[in-house]
Length: 216
View: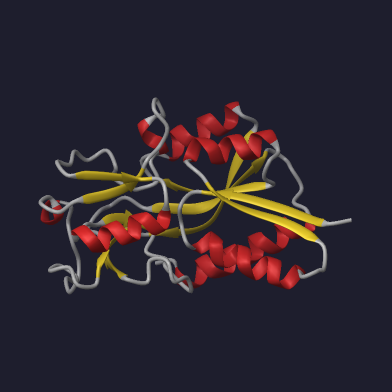
């Protein structure tokens, strides 16, 4: 019987590395694995509906209570793996790339890139911290690689966890601390009270190890 395992996640790089380490360790001659890049609503739907065993998401100190309320309604719970400060990701060639710290005010004239959520999705489903701050130049993407390429092409920026380890996607970007009191909480969602299977347990261990090493 083929091995099966599926994870859904927002458009972050750290879950890709954890997933790769997990399936390489599992090996086998007959398997079907899935890693699904999703919007926040899709991640919740995948886990609630059983399409994925768990879903990787990021909460912020300003969105946690609202996201937890939605998860409660769907019979899900958020499990924290690590906390991190938000970072600005921008091209290495960007005029501000050598800054030691940046504010959103200093970035106001540059294009802001973010991941598009479904029409009608609540604002707190945004994958980027401080997404509620008004901006005059906004470019929305549905694909992580496209966002990285566009950021380089238009000298834009995004707000991220800053964890771009081990993946070529995002290799052209550099990260700079963002001056803010907002914190990120990085973790995963599962059905409330669910016991993780062998594959999910391995994945969570890899995810936690990576986040603990690189999160700031």
